[in-house]
Image (tube, rainbow, N blue to C red):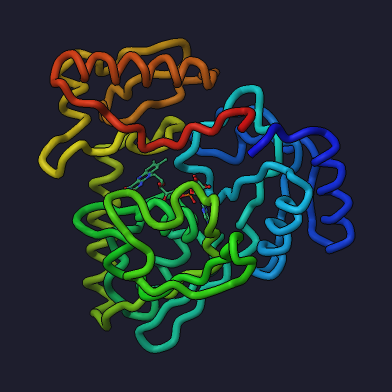
Length: 311
Ligand SMILES: Cc1cc2nc3c(=O)[nH]c(=O)nc-3n(C[C@H](O)[C@H](O)[C@H](O)COP(=O)(O)OP(=O)(O)OC[C@H]3O[C@@H](n4cnc5c(N)ncnc54)[C@H](O)[C@@H]3O)c2cc1C
């Protein structure tokens, strides 16, 4: 996409006004991410329906305005200079409903809301996702997973806006091309997740609750939940290769650049110890990658999505 100019944004805002879609100019991104890093977006858009999301994207394309869709901001690193363009937030699409063993959730529904709704309905399958600080849309996009489960194993169907064909359609699980921490959604160039349908199994409420409690306990024991982070910083290079261990064995636990630090609790996490800048994060990520490449000959891939100020 070409550079997003002030004129592109002005034109976009005029279309949002006409469509009656809520927006705010100069939206601070740091408080909207779990890393608490990032400057302002030129405009933050807050659609309240699937139709409005589709329209917000269609209008952005019409005006040549750069855009991205954001869920709970738990897997992104924005630049301190912000985002030149529009960030479209899904948080208003947070409906959750259950019918027999089928659970439907809006893209902006939190996994907390979804997993507890499943538990309350006595439905099993989503326990692994309890504690992932994600929106449903972000979880599907990333094929979020933990403790042996992932979205691919429970998603039946996803409603998406296809910006190439300018239409809302439904993709079944096989069409989602789920793989380790990725899906057909990619970086959201073409598809935006609007809602997700999960197919679950009947289970015993107490057993489900116990499993969720146990997994949350394991998270709290292992993960640095007392500091801002974006979860695991790197993807696992192979199923049997643990990045945290490689980083720890490379004596990088606790290593820091400015306010960004390799967590002292779990070396797979990079935490913001206070005042970390995007530059601190990027330098630290680079240092870890170089060290692991030298020590293991492994080229680590970042799991956190780095979002540049400009396209
Ligand atoms: C403490 C902590 C623990 C974590 N534990 C786990 C874990 O156990 N397992 C795991 O997999 N991850 C984990 N994560 C990482 C993160 O929570 C997941 O990657 C999560 O799925 C991201 O969802 P989100 O809504 O926050 O996405 P965001 O960070 O908002 O966005 C991530 C990407 O998804 C895209 N996106 C978001 N919504 C949509 C949509 N509706 N349509 C199209 N694209 C969209 C964005 O454009 C962006 O590219 C953890 C993070 C933290 C901070």
